[in-house]
Image (cartoon, each protein chain N blue to C red):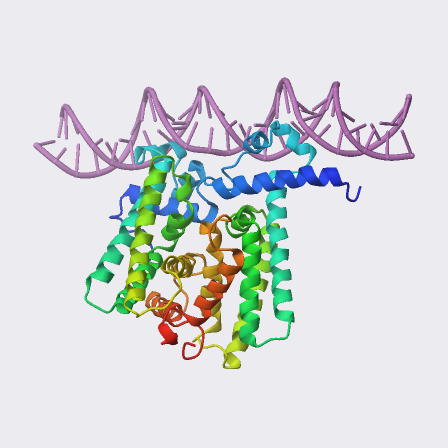
Length: 197
Length: 197
DNA sequence: TGATTTTACTAACGAGCGTTAGCAAGTGTA
DNA sequence: TACACTTGCTAACGCTCGTTAGTAAAATCA
């Protein structure tokens, strides 16, 4: 009862298709009948594999949160300058975002359809993640490796640039995820001015 | 101070309340009965003032689009360096975003619930607006006032930072809209590195 | 083999959805 | 006064929603 492989695969298939629909139409505007049709099933059949519609959303949101934490931890565990750690953290974030753009979009926009207490738990995780980023930026400011009037503000702007990515990124574009990660890090750290102005 | 002025038409009140609900719960997850209750009405009464639920969304989305275009035009019509124009355009964009955060959030996230052909028209407007920004950045690159490997990429990142604002901005925060506009422009143009570099 | 689990079906439930029709009270205008 | 316009009500329409119950074929495994 712990982990039969074939069960997992059908469930994962449902999650995957649902994620794509949630992204394209939103959680509330996606019906279970629509999801079932996309999978070649009848609506009722879905409930042999999942308990509820929200369960899918829950799994997507919390699963991705875990990936973000893992990426950040790996990026900052290696010895490097603060600026180097920030760059690695940015690239790790971008890597998670681009690994599954649909899931990322759902993670970023559909979490508010979680009901309590999941919603609050999710927001707490999100705040914890942002706080980690903020602390890293603050260390950079203290060490003189970064310059900004306010760590909180700088961090918000930084994450903003990253989190808009799923709205325009296409896996078949000419820039690879690593290209994008590098350019984003460059632009955010160096700005748009020549020689930094 | 924020009490509804008696001069505001019932229609405008409906739009305003609906915008707040659409922002908090999403368009699809907000029912007309819920909207009516928030206004102290019965559901059917709404239809003495509006034709449909989508009509409200249409008005919010296209109304804000017009504001963005007006802001950009005013920002770039004044004679200034390219960098100065970009700075003004950024600040104009932020000013529109902060004037009505709820409407901005709806504009940014709920437009996909527009049905055709409104949806395509909206996307065309959006693309036109981004193209204007992109052209401005490109002129900056050509004139040597800005530095980036790619105007399109730089523009996306720039607008990304701006458009994330409605998710965290609170009108009663300690930063005024103009403060925010200035800081955002600084950070995006100069980056996080000390002295640029 | 037989037992069990997995997978999917049909049919239906109660609830809520956006919207409409018809009516009535209040308000401004001539 | 009479008329029109605005505003809001009640009641209901056809429809879709997420979910459940009960059943059964197929796959898995002892």
